[in-house]
Image (cartoon, rainbow, N blue to C red; front, side, top):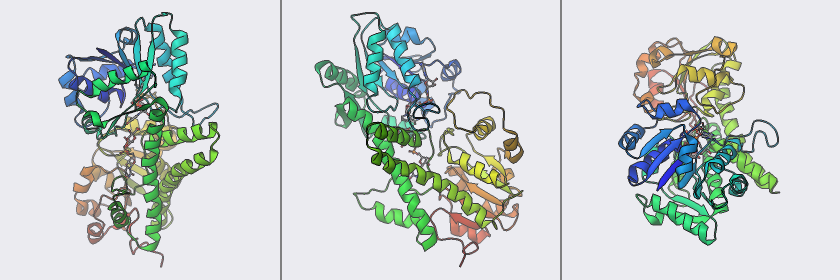
Length: 477
Ligand code: NAD
Ligand code: UGA
């Protein structure tokens, strides 16, 4: 069997590396229109940072795993074609700001149709609006000139999270496969199932109809994000009542019906998918005549926006209502630890908020380059592009932002530290030394609740953690 995967990004690359590792009998080729990305996959300097990924890639690359820009050849030869292209939020036209932009998906489908001389199973790996398979099927059928070629479409959404992608792929909670309910649909499901059965126990492989699989992916992300917004909403109440959000999360999480995961209050969720997928779900609801459902889910995103804004307000309010000309040290720019991904990272909003107030921000992140930070901060609107388009750093950003690769230098002479990513190394620093070199009163705003607040206060910091009782220094009463 030959597999081709269109899209060598955060999903296509790691997923296919795992398939190749576990299925030595299958040839797997990952193709992309982005030559720089493909070139990086062929080296040990992979285009994405993901713990354990290089090891998996190295075991299979050159054996049965290949990366190529020759999309036509490899897709043409494949029996199974995974489509793992980006499906960002539309930025213009009908549905701008919420609908999924399916330009890349449709482009991939047209390419498949053009180069297919044999029948294929097409696997939707990208997250797409429910009913996309129907549209793709029409594009494929009307654009393939070889009458005997048949396409069977399956939905096989990916549930990996960045930073833990390898363990998520190695030991998934479940694999979901949706297909047509007729005989050839069921046959195609069995073919894909046989690939996963090389390492995933069959009882963890769930099969459904196409629309259930497509909708389950959007629903899973909406539920996960909803938990974060729910605990973040409670964090605001904790701060004004003296309750501690960590204790509340623990207390409710021990109820087996609720469970303990995804209850970490934070500065807000980021990443390329939660916001995009909820907005996409809202758009699907609106176009299917259930706007009330859209309103319900949209509030998860607006709570997240409020949480990010609230964090900036808390910082400014604590620092005597002005941060003009003050140096603020930013610890962490990635949207979560163990990734260099900055898509929709809350750090962008927080840094923008601080700059608007007149602060100067100096940033440190162990995995994000200075170029990436200036690129993200300079764009008026977030854009998905790789490699990044040459963005001229905005003059105001250049003036107000600095990047250093030593956290002690970043914090030197700063009025405050804001922790925006939960990198483990942040917990290991010598905070006495950091405190000694800061302007007093020295503030620390922990947007990830990873620090020992009592210890920081003992050193002398005025310390704030999301959803924790306020430091007596900033308490109003
Ligand atoms: P990405 O932007 O990292 O990668 C997508 C790749 O597809 C890019 O390299 C792009 O050049 C390539 N591409 C686009 N059109 C192409 C075409 N016609 N031919 C060949 N290559 C093409 O995106 P990603 O983060 O890997 O996400 C891919 C999909 O998976 C999205 O729908 C996303 O919602 C979903 N998803 C992402 C994650 C995640 O953790 N990032 C997890 C689960 C699901
Ligand atoms: C998320 C889902 O967890 C994956 O199952 C899904 O496949 C993926 O989206 C996707 O569709 O792209 P990811 O965004 O990579 O994965 O990472 P998460 O661990 O979900 O974190 C998302 C954001 O929520 C991060 O900013 C994280 O810091 C934040 N978060 C997470 C919290 O603030 N609190 C929590 O308790 C958990």
